[in-house]
Length: 141
Image (cartoon, rainbow, N blue to C red; front, top):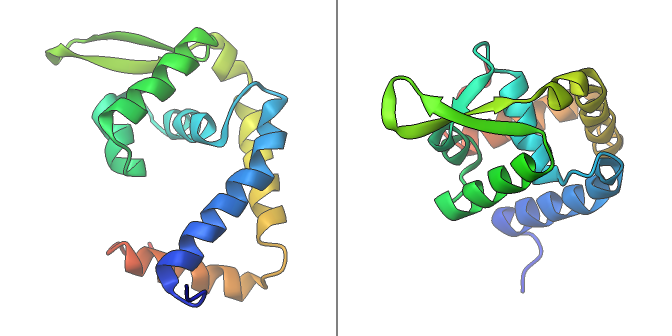
């Protein structure tokens, strides 16, 4: 198997990031995937999101997303509420527990990313982000 293929290297980097990150999040009884859901919600002005929002943002399947949300709800980080604009759907909202941890969790996310990319210069990190966004057909705005 060739080790210089872009897709293989991206997957390996993602796996290494998760392996390095999970011990940090264990202190909060979270996984990296669960943290990503909370981080998404922290960035929402309304403080809520639809299940499909997570699926699109993180390219997750519906069952995977539902499993993450179920676990976060059991742990008291989120709640699912009726969507006033769609009687069939639910909105995901942060609980006080998650809101109280916001600054700590976002800071921890920055620490982990900085540790993971510490071998890169600032310019290399910017180039990597731009190239990954290009691969994902998005602009680097």
